[in-house]
Image (cartoon, rainbow, N blue to C red; front, side, top):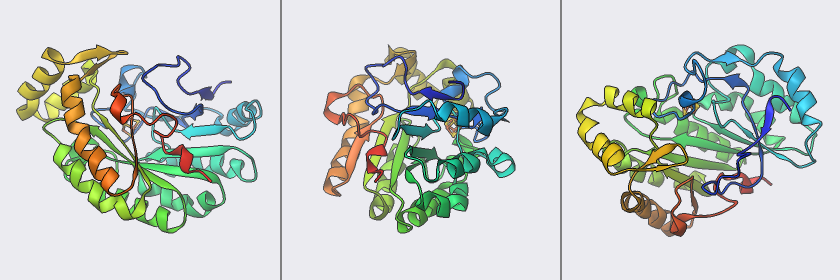
Length: 283
Ligand code: SF4
């Protein structure tokens, strides 16, 4: 298969996702998130381009998948990044799924997804909207829609009966942990599941964050470069600090009776295998 690939083919013990496939309609991403991990393995990542012969190749890939397969859209780009306005690869793919048995999980930061809302109501799908900050998105995610637009997307999708979860991540110490705690209160009426995770540094993303927030240089270098630990190609915050950042969110989610999971945290208390990505919400 060329464009649809098994998700996590390395079967990392850090990943608790259910078995699924991954599809990126674009190479690279125009949302330009400073913390993005994909920049470390995809060339010219911030100069996104459409995949060549996208639908033709994807249709060939699709017929090789077992019935009811779960396809995650997308894990190394955003399916509703600005290029989607021009090329509509995501929309074309979703249209093709109509009437098939395939399930689709859409992960996005963009309210452009609302353009396809009618289509989504006819599919076996769930949507995961990522929200990182209320006030810092212009700096942290310069090409992505801001907080209000994402919250609007969560509300409208949920009111249309589409299962929605929210990823509250990445939590970057000293930058957004307080805001993430507050955002949880605002999304509660619209979601049944949240996923949280801390920022896992890579040399290039850490450099970008420090350049954008020079006042946090000392803190970030101390926590990641001096005290952090290396796991699976990334630098993690110390275990105790990850625990401390996640625990209040876990407790608040419990209070609200929300399903809760973490992503690649390697902290047993918060593991929720098979449920972490919110795909279990697909009817
Ligand atoms: S939206 Fe996702 S893929 Fe795109 S730049 Fe941001 S983190 Fe990377």
